[in-house]
Image 1 (cartoon, helix red, strand yellow):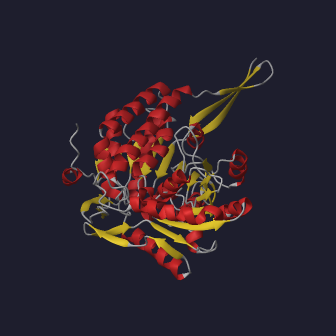
Image 2 (cartoon, one colour):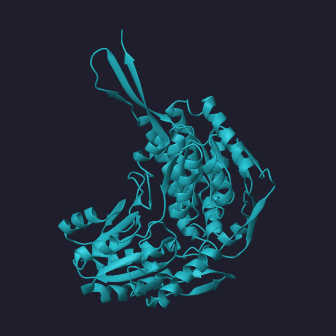
Image 3 (spheres, helix red, strand yellow):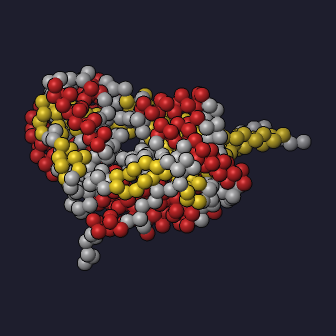
Length: 496
């Protein structure tokens, strides 16, 4: 039998990278500026991380452009790129415990989730795109004799990827794997709260054989490093996952600079509809809790609005309160912890403000709503359920990004659909019914990029993920993701 890992002892020994990686070399920011990175679950200082600025962005763009123009990666055979990315995927799995620990220390998530979900998932994404890239074919257009018109995909050039802190390595993989597989050179800008796994990934990529300059990692503050990438005329494409507010800034940066392509996966306020004809209410309750409390509710597609048909509303709510007790926050480095710390004091204060504001507006606190001190940190919030919420109140309309669920009854199918669609977002939705006709009818009526039927927040690398309206546009995952990182070229040949 394996000995349980002593994550606390490992945490004290864990090497924590703090320097930017540009052109295959690690170095401080050119300005010498740094920012402090802390473990949100304990407050312990992890390191003083390079705060990259415009000069570092300039260096990284030049390195990425040189590597792309040289053809060392962009023009090598797809089968060669495939082998390097497969090696990188394998290295990630070989270092799964280290990467999981870094992820937990950076953002406070349970190390068990990072170990079994996040890091293996990120490695799988690299493996899937590696296996895909030498199976993509061009097209030949139907033309008369004497003409050959081919349609091929070409890499864009320099891609900037700006990723959030809630799933740092997993969401980085969603961007990096298809971008690199297509032959681009990439600059990765991790969230300032979570540079650890991004910088370690840069090391592993070099070890896997990725040429210097093909992957550059710039830690730093969003308003400085992210803005500089958004405005740089040498960046051909920028992909972003994060808030709608910041996504709008990147659109403006593109307009102010070189009209670079911008692809956004932004906020969400996903609705979960439970109809009375759902026969497995026990499963629906378990998934409703999972859909909002997993990863501390810090999920863009979290099912943060729960709509329950009135006939089963009271029973469902009672079961949900009992289920929430299984999600009490605890030390993220303990193997049985299901919910860890929120990412920092600012986010914790924001979540608590949403709870108090909702109560002041008349919402009833059914359970939770407490901020806890654990291991000297106050970044822990109990699973919270609020009922009696009005559809126009901020708790129903705004993304909270915490373990806070707003619950509302409904009487008719049309009312449920209208309430679910009453949102500026359109990322995801879930519904529970045993009526096949209703499942198709409601799924078709919900304005969301992904609709999960009799489960919540379903996703896989084989299917596209993304939304509409102010949740953004473009799709991560699946073969459709290559659309963001390649451009089509028509070559017309007239025979003589």
